[in-house]
Image 1 (spheres, rainbow, N blue to C red):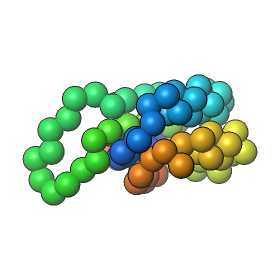
Image 2 (cartoon, helix red, strand yellow):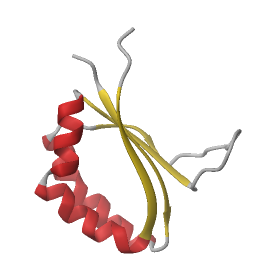
Image 3 (cartoon, rainbow, N blue to C red):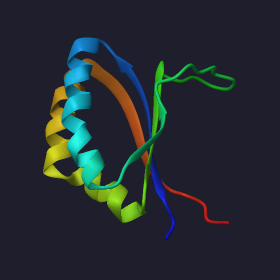
Image 4 (spheres, one colour):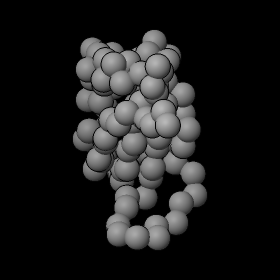
Length: 97
């Protein structure tokens, strides 16, 4: 089965509230088999523009990645993050070449 990824770029205006979001998203991420590949580490923009925080999550399938995002538990976590962030998120199917 081909894996899928959430690729997120974000600016966070309140790190304390962001910690609440991280606590709230832990359960849906575990439920849908998410694994952090990148979690806000050092980055260097080589082309174009990017936000200051990048996160990449790996899921066992595209269906799991989509279901996690749509789940009531993740949507509740998202309500915590939205007021303190400017974010872009893409759900993309991996390459099994």
